Image 1 (tube, rainbow, N blue to C red):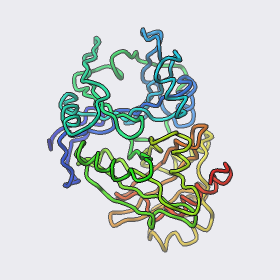
Image 2: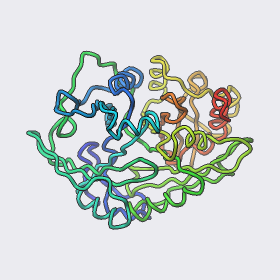
Image 3: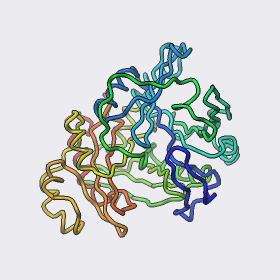
Length: 382
């Protein structure tokens, strides 16, 4: 187990979360698939705004009659945008109910059959029996299980595949290739679940997938004068796959998690945290391309150095870009959150740069949630 190598990210597996059982083990995020109303337009948006590049395509031209998918890539992030071509397709119903959102969080494994057997044997509900998919570039084995809401995990074994993405897809290369924005890999993905369900799903990741609890926050840690939530961060042994699980907590007004649950019509993936090694460049690029971020008040930066100590970045630049900073005993991190990137106030993107820190920005929670509340007030949903 200790010498496995992720075939996509080219990292050697090393267990750094000793409490994790790691019987799978997971080698990283293979791809994230969103079900959307119009895959072509969604692909154009993620290319234009976030700098993703063409990777592969599946649709009518590849023999599919009921759906179309565009696979995009930026460094170690693979994003798939899928839309239904037939109103009887379950994808159509998923978008009708939830709006555009994350359906599949796919995880790279060395053995997809074993991953399925291990998780189903521990109580997971099967989504996809182990299936061998092949073409002239080799074969991929995939299997899958259900998790919170309508979200699923698919285990991907691609060690015997040389193709662009998956069998059934053809390589895609259009004439429109905006430059990347410096996004590197998926740092973590956050799930929002209903009242009293956080512990249930934390236990699911512990017992079914061998994760350990990395950190937890209660309503005293994550609250403002109006809203509150609770969260537990679950991690696999290598720390390559981290899933914070949020649930609402009692507050004077409606929390961001409640708003999400109302508009998404149930539990789902709230946001993707995408890592960069130069957040100043990445956020500058994203802002120039029209990506909207939550607004942080000037007062946040007045006592920044007193709170986080010395940092390499210039305070005025951070203030201009509205980037948040927090420190733990391992170092510090910089982060910023977009406004919702879809019509409903559900899915958003976090941009994060870690400079030693392994935490999740606890010191920024108040400023962040007050910014979210200002947006909720404008929407009339606070």
